[in-house]
Picture 1: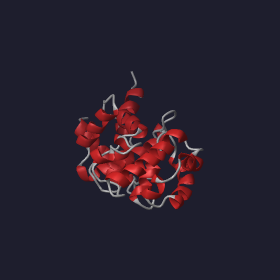
Picture 2: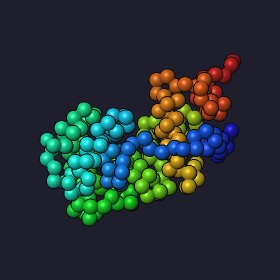
Picture 3: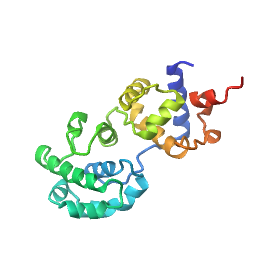
Picture 4: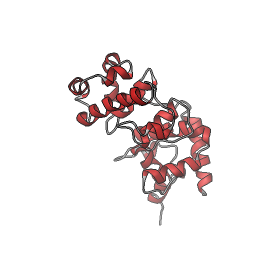
Length: 214
């Protein structure tokens, strides 16, 4: 099967079986989504969602967070992974929004990446979810699932992003990002993938290779 055919089959299956695919992070503004995505690094969305209501209430606008102390932010996120670094990143991010972007979350990838705590993945999430940009964010789930299925042979996040960007139509990239994340989170899990329950198994490269009868 050609790569183009595989992308077509994957798109067809997800379109039929996962019509609604969106972030599981809770948010009520671009700024609050940015906070949530930064906090979600190496942490589950479920745990982040447990803490963000009080964070959002305390810091409704970037200026509120920019003026907060490290100790105040740390206390709100101390049970989330890497709270020291994330507290510094959140304050730095908010400060830069105030100083460089008039308190608004920018829409361009290169501008988003100038914010503390914002790497390529986070920038792509914000650009895609908030501004409907035709980009694909590659996290650990997307990286794993894409390579297992055969959508990419890339050995780096950047290489996988390039392959997925080339394979999915621009108008589908935002949804494809969530398709792959949710599939990796609930079906194609890291340790024990549920291949017998997976509707993609008939054309999944790894499943086929592991079940070839010699």
